[in-house]
Length: 358
Image 1 (spheres, rainbow, N blue to C red):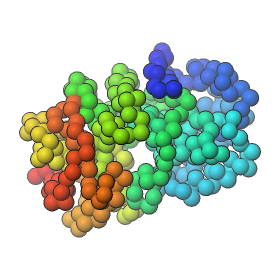
Image 2 (spheres, one colour):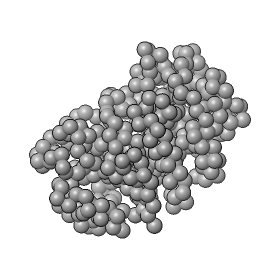
Image 3 (spheres, rainbow, N blue to C red):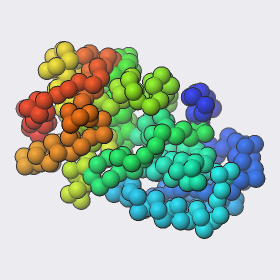
Image 4 (cartoon, rainbow, N blue to C red):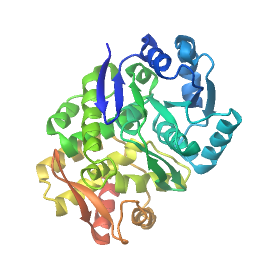
């Protein structure tokens, strides 16, 4: 069964793409356009044969297969893809189809929105993380060394197809990575959503149908109100200032971790900050701490990592005039933005997660 959610000028479709909805959309809107599929090696091996054989409109599509992993979300890879698009004589009336996780949706959207000053693209997210986060919201971009998403533009996909069948091939690590973003949506905007998430785990994706729809709806509503992130959209940054620094540190040390794991521990650190400056109650924080420590493995961060983490936090794109600004929560379901936090308090929060809150 398919359902839809209107998002700005775009639409998010929920349901099996191989049952006709993708083919119908392409035939109705891009029958005379060239189609370029951007995917990674993992998705190519698992799904590409089934997709191409089931969607007639993609029978002549060109496929650009990229190496998997956050470390490949960079300008060099983009340059290679742009060069391939020129070789294929792609023009602005053609279509890019991003099929993959967050890296592919972020980078593919950036590639499409900058090539020849912008061409249409659609997202087909294949991980839980990308279904509830990266595929929706119009943020496209790439990393600059260890600094996450430093280069990018705001550009909406013309359509997003959320098909839970893709989740059947994910391992537990990938499922929990995506689940962290769902937890964030509950923490910043919907206590009922948070409470429902506490009653489940992502090991059985088939049980997540309603929760995925809720999570996407929360994010889409926030983005509709503030597309360019001048106000309320900053709420989506909860857990990400410290979470991105954690990711960057591991990336620099050749040990890339799932995005959601960085966010989970970032939420714990920023939850700690919330108790100090935003009024988050001890009972609410204990609930957050208990869940994250139970379901997310302790990050192997050395004590000496603190100095580098602080450097990465200082280079976060959300900062202003050298001052670190955080989104925090005052209670579960309520956020506060643009909170200036001293280096001393940031150090305390990092020490807290380094010692697992003990």
